[in-house]
Picture 1: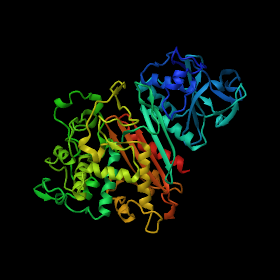
Picture 2: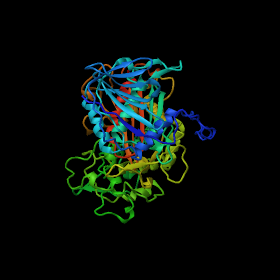
Picture 3: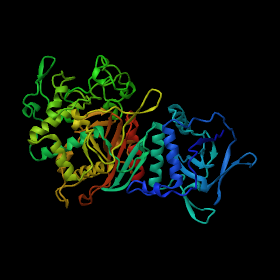
Picture 4: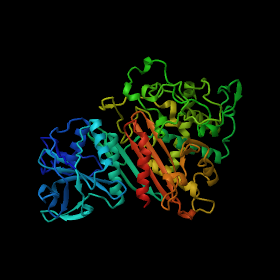
Length: 590
């Protein structure tokens, strides 16, 4: 098996080992620690990758199968045939290490090694030749980001894992390679996910039993300015807005102000009466909450609209929020519609401002139903705009006001309606890639037509606070020390299976659910079912996942379980995001 190594030019003006100047220290963002020279090198590498300034070296250097030897001085790659030393990697020059395994004890390590003041060398070490690593290599080569991944082969030594090694200057350094702790493994999984999906920036938060144990950022919230993502970065949460709207509905049900099975015309008097095949039908809030009300999703224009002429064609490909819900929810018999990848959704990129939820109904209220209410699942964001209007009438309060009341109760202090003009702390820029995989800024859009279905901006901290409230409401009972926001009987109703989304996923009222026995092919003592929702918006993807602890039997100790929130500032990668959240929940459940 062969090994390659390539050099990547970083920055001729960056002197490794040079003292940071006072003005550089002053320019550090408040609350952030001063970055080391090594971290600055990594910043340069990642930024160059995103800007496609790191072409692959065409000169390949083939070597034979090697073994790895680790000492306090560094790593030696030794040719197994004749014990000839092929390469030495001093530990003090290893500036970044990303590791992962295939689940069967085979390890892979990607090393960034500082070879000079202006070059960084990459190595991929494998315990066996793994198709997963080759798949990763193919992804990186295809996306043309300029990330060289080297088809190297080694016999990987487990002595590399989490070692404290003496540097030449007598200090100690912790070698972060094959990880045994949870955070390191999670870090590896996220790096792998970002490389495979060519993601500019990601924010992640994980909680255990109602306490946030880890939140972090990866990549860039602003590529042009070189601003890093962190655990407080705010992004569009897209369809995670739906569970939040469902929570408002649950609270009104609890207060006796909303009846789920009451026809919506009894709340919205002027909403047109619908008929299907000549039969007058009634739509209920329950049906809308589980996407069986027959309301359509985004319309597909017959020709490119003038109002959307500035929308890049590539930005509209695969951007439907049905994909945001992790694979298309549209049924196979929808042959009358063109495929998502060939269509720019006029409404998805709407720039029109609607002054109220009631005004936003104009976008679809006069359109025929797609199916008879209660008979067919059809994922629809417009259906949640209609729910928002129902909630306004039921509560006698405008929908933005209902949201603000909820955020105030939960402490979601950094969750807002997605307006473009107001200054929002830590707000990201939004991106998409064109057909040549070049990174672009997304066009400006106005999401006032879908506050309740996909129009909110938040951060992982606020989303985890929301998840804790929901999980506590599910697990608490009348004997609990603290009164839940939503009574258990109401929460049970909202988290109960109502319709099949796409097996094994079922749709509840505003939430998706995978039951325990259908999770990863069967029951396991360490696994539970989970509730979640994904989202996709212009320049964003997201997921919020809640896994209750199956051993939970004490309501006073609630909430018990793992919650994961992930926000990404690029569209068209939502299909894989649920699997990442699930992998992280598995890591932190151990």
